[in-house]
Image 1: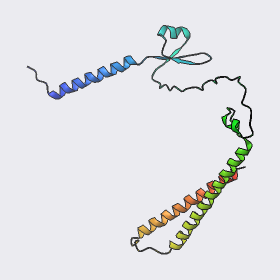
Image 2 (image 1 turned 45 degrees about the vertical axis):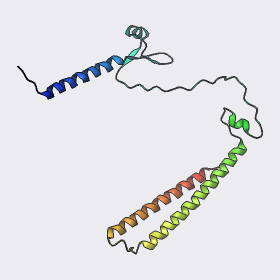
Image 3 (image 1 turned 90 degrees about the vertical axis):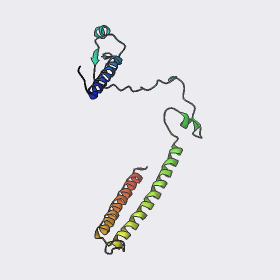
Image 4 (image 1 turned 120 degrees about the vertical axis):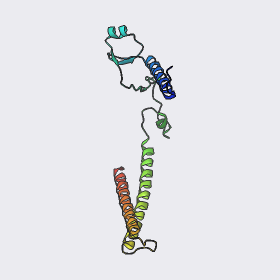
Length: 178
C-alpha cells in the first residue's frame, strides 16, 4: 500500500482547481477582430470565416478600451434662441458664447481675487523673511541641539522659496488677464 503525504494531495487539488479556473476563463474570452473600412470596426460577433471574408484581423492579447463617442445633436437645423439683453440666452445657448458684459465682470472679479491673494502672499513672504533674518543669528531655548536649529532654518528657507514661487505665479496670472 502506497501512502502519500497529505500535502501532495492538497497541492494536487489546488492545481486541479487552478486548471479548471483557467480553462473557464479561456472559454469565456472570445476572439476580437479589427475590420477595415471607413469606420474601423472592432467586434467579437463574427465567426472566423466571416472575419476572413471581410478581411478582418484578430487581435489577441491586447487590451481593448471602449470610449463613448460624442452623442449626435437632437436637431442640428433648429434655429438658435434669440438673444436677450439680460444674457439669459447666452447661458442657455449651445454655441458657448458669453455676453461681453458678463465676461468683463468675471474678468474684473478674477483680477480682484488674484490681487488680494498676491497681497496676502507678499505679506506672508515679508513675514517669513523677517523671521529668517531675525533668527539667523540666534538659537531658541529649545534648540540646544544644533541640528534642531539647522532644521528650523532649512524649513524657513524652504517656506521662503515656496512663497516666492507663489508670488511669481500670481503675478504671471495677473499679467495674463486682459
